[in-house]
Amino acid sequence: MLRKIFLFVSAFIFITAELFSQTAPPLAANPKFSLGVLFGYTGNFGINVSGTISEFSYDIPLSIKFSGGYNIREAGNPLDARKIFINDNTNGDPDESGHSIDLRLDFAYPINLFSIRKSLLYIGPRYSMHTSTFDFVGGNEFFDITTSQFGLGAGLETYFGISPNLSFVFSGGFDYYFDSQIGGHDSFYNPDGTDISGREGFTYQDAAKSINAPKYEFRFMAGLSFGL
Image (tube, rainbow, N blue to C red; front, side, top):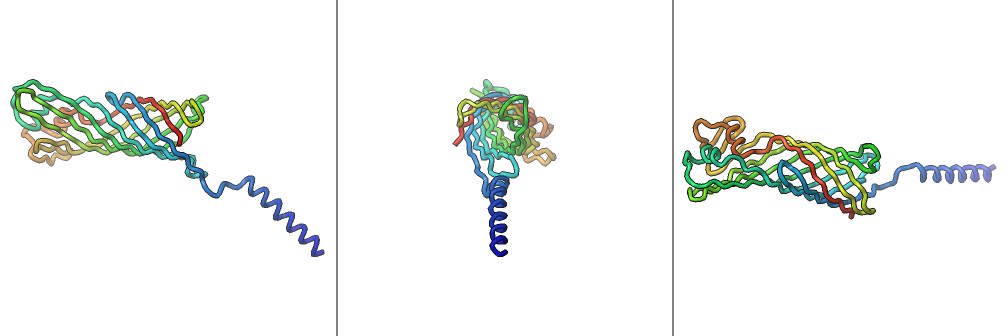
């Protein structure tokens, strides 16, 4: 009798162990890392460099991407910026340039999109540092106007495999940035109207328009993703 019980228990343990090993999730996830480089339209021309971690959990098919970008911007209206931040002079030949640096955190979730093997819907916060530079040649005026803004964004990425560790990526998205202080040359304008040394007759909206401060932004970029 004891021999039969021992054989039954042994068989039960063996069968249970076999079934568990086939159906139970792994004890630890096997995270994957990748690097990406994208170029394209970000209101003008931009470049984005990213690092992604995926498959870090066997319960949630979520990826997390950290990225940073450099974007060429329209600087705005140099004559208006001069009036709003400095003085009413009109001498000199105006020249302008603009750029922004953005930091982005995205949470991406896989979706089924036609027959494409890998498509991700992403959403996350953004932080943009915008600078408009104005130079009045011959007018002795050279100044930067800056603003730093938080925002939110969402979009869709599709991956087309080239090799096991290399994919072509197409990304389209939309970002929205919240109003934030705009300033330069000792004049600062705030969304709530608490300006510092602002020039009389001008508002925050005037300042934002004069430097083309980011508000809404569509992004269409393409590039490569390298698996590590």
